[in-house]
Amino acid sequence: MADIQKIYKILLNKYSRQGWWPIAGKYSGGPRTEAERFEVCIGAILAQNTSWKNVEKALENLRRAKALSRKALEKISVAKLARLIKPAGYYNQKAKKLKEFARFYQELRGKEPEREKLLNVWGVGPETADSILLYAYNKPIFVVDAYTRRILSRLGLCKEAKEAEKCSYAEIQKFFHAKLPRNAKLFNEFHALLVEHAKRHCKKKADCGCCCLAKSCKNLK
DNA sequence: AGCCAGGCTACCG
DNA sequence: CGGTAGCATGGC
Image 1 (cartoon, rainbow, N blue to C red):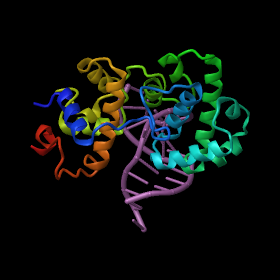
Image 2 (cartoon, rainbow, N blue to C red):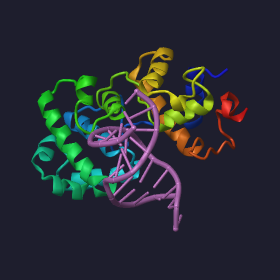
Image 3 (tube, chains in turn green, red, blue):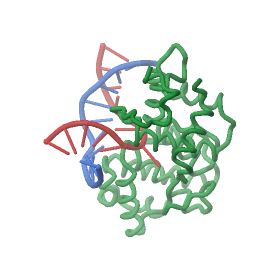
């Protein structure tokens, strides 16, 4: 039977710890400084529908230009910002999103954001909001993305009578919240493992050869 | 040489 | 509500 905790154990055993969020490869239980926390938020926005490699280039450009801070982002022009984050794609939209977020972050004055407030920020949708809560604030909120939906769908999980592909973001998130202990470290690792598994095997065009979840997968029956 | 990537907004019916 | 065009670069 394919219970979700078992899936986690198999994936962890197969790929070992992923160690997201990758700030210079050293994440351990959440950001330690405000600067690091802010950087995770910026990374979450830049990563929208974009490969992490390209996000890293954009982050590096920002770092070199000393523009990777709330204050700097509030001051920089949208045009200049767009030029710096070009490698991350959608650079005009994302430049505006980063400016909007910097302003929101300033208004927080060090407080933790509520999910609803995050969702009210232009450019922040459910996945980005939850990524920020989980990876920047270490809150036990499960992040659902296209990979998560695809893997769940193929496994045949989420709603018994309903394909996960057709489940809403909230439904899929509820599924994980209901079946797992509320633990940020677990959620962090699990999400990262799902991404890794989707990249290696559960691609758009499924590559089921030596997939560690084959025995639990409805797709192969 | 396509396809795809750690989505979101705006607008449509 | 659900569905979809538009946004855009770089890697494989």
